[in-house]
Image 1 (cartoon, rainbow, N blue to C red):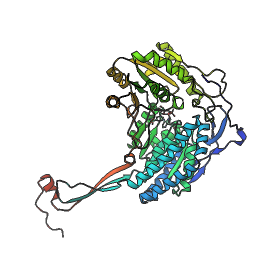
Image 2: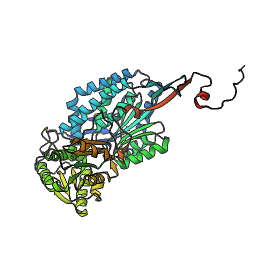
Image 3: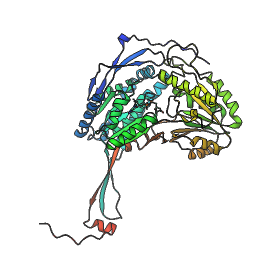
Image 4: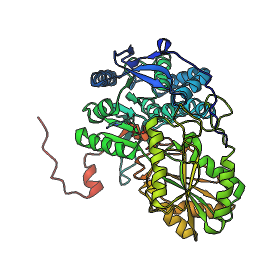
Amino acid sequence: MTTTIESPSFASSETSLPRYRMFIDGQWVDTADQYVLVSPATEEPIATAARGGIEHADAAVAAARRTFEQGVWRDLPPARRAAVLEAAADALEARSQELATTATREGGAPLYLSLGLNAITPISNLRYFAEQARAYRFEAPGPLVGGIAHSGVVRREAIGVCAAIVPWNFPLALAVWKIGPALAAGNSVVLKTDEKTPIGALELAREFQAAGLPDGVFNVVTGDGETVGAHLATHPDVRKIGFTGSSEVGKKVAAAAATSNLKRVTLELGGKSPNIVLDDADMRTAVDGAIWAFLMHAGQACESGTRLLLPRAIHDRFVARLVERLGDVRIGDPLDPATTLGPLISAEQRDRVLRYVELARQEGATVACGGRVPPGVDAGYWVEPTVLTDVTNDMRVAREEIFGPVLCVLRYDTVDEAIAIANDSDFGLSAGVWSASVDAALDVARRLEAGSVWINDFHMANENYAFGGFKQSGMGRELGANALDAYTEPKSVQVSLEPDLRKRAYGLALPTPAPDWD
Ligand code: NAD
């Protein structure tokens, strides 16, 4: 296994660190108190960012509310809104490489992943939402009622001030999944970035402003979850909250949203996704697919395939091959294009992952490979790719989200048993099925409790398909053809064309006609 941590190609001294400010009501706002953003690969500081507080959240919500009430964005023709989203996408595209490099320095994902998931994907997503703004039926003729002359329209109206709260793992893409449909539909938005990864969203704000988005329509507050995040979740002027993060915090957000003002809520939460290999699968492809499923971004993806379900008959050969292939994983400087595995986000996360490996041993699992910090590493937050075998589905390591480069391997005897194990989870975000027979795989897919099922691949989330979870993996969906529905309120408007419509439609006994009004 390659375990050398190559020297980082970037070096920065604290005195020359870039300083990022918040974006509120069209202004760049600084604070004396600053976050120090640290490279997870080297632990070197790379930038500082404002640490916003409740007063900043309030100012951002007030600006968003004002612009919504004035209609400066909401009342524009959808095509004008679409043009602003597209102009911002074009500007970001011209800066893709820079965005990817910054995201890698900030969040530790290897450069190829940052380019895909922190640049190309959010840019493509923004264009997708712009297209949806053009095509969306903001107002559609209503149906005839009982075949009786009757006129009506069904409108979809922007909700108002929408708050978005995102985690650190794919910070720009997950922000765009909320901001894109919210703005396309005419809402005003307050985004709270994660404490560790605010830069991409601030660059997006810069490009929105340059593209002509009116001041106050989009605001970015950089602040702590327990203060700024919790405040937005209870704020009486916020009418919708889109949250991505852990199931634990998601429940708090949902509770706060319900008890404050019954905010509309979309939650994208954690996972413990099964990846089922059927006995007729192409084993070479399935082995590499299993690695891609659990190891992408060092396992720090909500949808990671972290429970690998293998037919008992092929288990030993499959695991041997898996461990051998993991020896080719290139761990190192995430800015090196050849690197395939980067660090974890923080020392806390590394220590948490190592504690889970210890727990696995105590629970009776076998550490087939990894389970430790790569030898010789003295900076950064690294854990080797780790495979746990002899795992049973009742173990905590099989039930709880570890969020690191750790794969649990489970055996099964029949397909029914594999499906039962797969579904025996509090989560239901995604699943993989590997088979030479698409029909057999589709049959399994129909029986799985998961928001996304991928056949002979993994991590196939894309804008054309709704994404989200069953059970405690979330509530509602993002992306997909109906993405704007989550950021609009339906309003039914009906006009009576006949004075006794109700009587004829429903057979109601109406009183005799009222005397003339004089
Ligand atoms: P987290 O829940 O700790 O934090 C997510 C965001 O919530 C951060 O911005 C944080 O500051 C904020 N926050 C924290 N406490 C809050 C509170 N009380 N009120 C409001 N906001 C609060 O999650 P994390 O550790 O940053 O990210 C990892 C988690 O996110 C994992 O569980 C992962 O599965 C999940 N995730 C889910 C998806 C998905 O689409 N389903 C995508 C990515 C990550």
